[in-house]
Length: 222
Length: 267
Image (cartoon, rainbow over all chains, first blue to last red; front, side, top):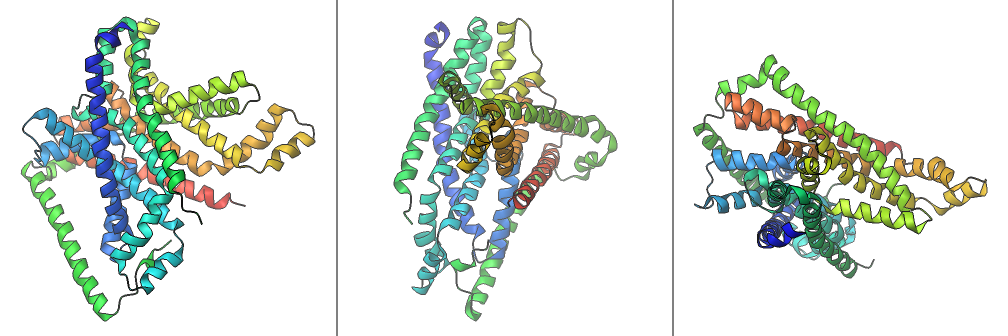
């Protein structure tokens, strides 16, 4: 137990990085996911095609490769510099990679949510004279959101755990700290592992409960 | 499923407007593609000598095929072990005995909420302190894949058993089967069938997760591609694109398999 107590500051700092990565990527992937969903159901074939190619590529590529590609491709080869500070730059690259990957799953969830909205809703909206953007944005998408709160919750929990892979672009979050600590305090491997595992359980468990509560509260009675 | 009910069929003006918009979209996409092209071009990533190695037989023989073999070895071992773990713990979690049910539930919930990478690190870097010997990267990866995905599979199977009509279980008991027989001969086979699409999606997740082996130096496809090919020919982008394409191809075929299974098995 000593190691975790002695190093508690750095452990908390590492978990704070995990939380920041999760929160910013979650926000980003929700926004991008909504955009992709709108593109996938748009009247323009080119938008539908672009979004559907993007989603199948992002979903079927390992996150490790996605993040390496953001680091090597977007960072080193596209020459995108988000900050002069290397640590901050890597942080934003990780956010980009996590967002790019997670938004594909958000899009899939939202699209299956759209399937649960009765056809009459969109038809009624159209008969009122609403166009595509308004039908989707005001009528169908809000209802779709309410029916996929639980799957979105699982996606966000997966995202929290996936932030550990950000180490491949050089972000030092919880998994990096755990590896360093196992190497330094070789005699306390079990304590260190369970300590870090508990950290993730503490992050994910309330999220699961909150999303479960929210999904019951938001469920559309039909 | 089409979503054509979200908008009116366009009239003459709408068709014209859609054409303009489509042209605009195409322009934006082309502009992005052009930006990426130019930036990669500055780094010479499109040069023919960066792509040519990907077509050479010796590159496939030294890097890609061994890497693919590594990925598949970890994934297949992981699928088998995770499947066994899943069946055992799903059954244990549905046991009549509280002293089996509760620990099984705790184990499943714990491994579901711990990031896979931490499990792999624990096995790989902690093995010396715990066992007095270093385990191979392969074992560490398979250890993580089994525990994490096994727990998820356990939950999938449990959901499958619970979705079966109650009459199945009652009928099996009525003809005199014992608890174990009811589970083994009646409930599990049907649950596995019903849940096949979800199980296949989980296998796709497992296959993708095997790429984490790269972090502990396991010799798999992403490692061979980026640290092998790219290091020799300094062609990071072409190598990454090829590796991604291989993964996408495998995963899409698994996806298709899942669709086919769910279409034919529904009776």
